Length: 89
Image 1: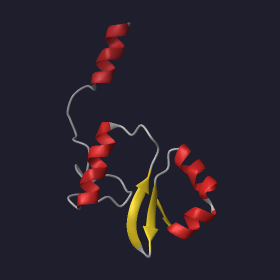
Image 2: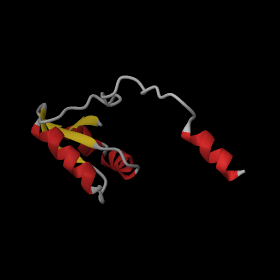
Image 3: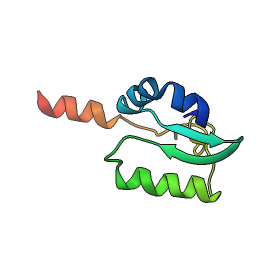
Image 4: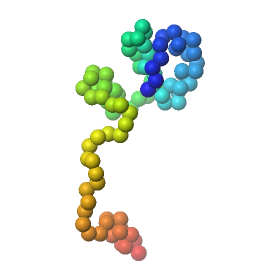
């Protein structure tokens, strides 16, 4: 998400609206204070809930991959994909 000041938005409105149309979100500021987020119409309900959590400060996201399981779980035996391929023959 890019951050744009009010004056910059006014001067280049059509350029920023094209970016929004392509799916990008824009954080609008006024005097270095966050004012609004401009986003495409038709946002998914799940995305809206996540956005609300971010705005309320409950969660944060820096744009990287989600943290969680650090590595894949190693299993013994044949892979399920091998069993499926064998069954197809």
